[in-house]
Image (cartoon, rainbow, N blue to C red; front, side, top):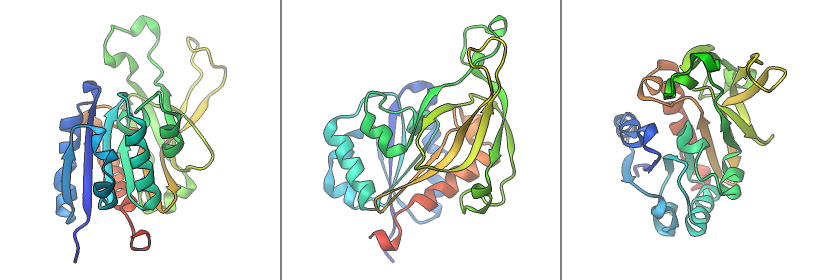
Length: 236
């Protein structure tokens, strides 16, 4: 039987530890029979032959930039059936200058609200808030999130801008705190999927740090998401 091919693309902002974060999931991919290729830049996206032979792209590239040729190659591969997945800023806060990338993914990081100003000390922890990730009705039936109960995190809580073509498996709600400018709670997608051509896109917004990625619920969602997003026989 032909082995599935996974391409791990990592880089961008070092605060998300792209090397150490992706290394957490390499044993899982290999245990599931994937042949894994690792790239430290998005140049590979412009290699049409390599992308056509790839069944799953796992991206961990926060911010950074992508060329028109690279994005066209990634998009064409997804449309043809290559799966595309990632977590946190590595997929939902990539390539801010590219509206076409946003169109592919279906949701884009806007902010992560912080603590009350008097409690901030100037580090990343200023944006760590306790919050709940709530599985939706769709999520309770979806293979990525079925059997996972609502879970609590104390980390960055992503607020994303999104469209209606995503299938939301879990949400998180940002309360209207006195020091914030919004006037009512805002519910944001936290885990979602998207069909794009013959391909599947899977986004998990928790994952700011290694301890969050090692949370059993988060890790399960990411690992199941890799399997779900992988090219299916009908897309071959």
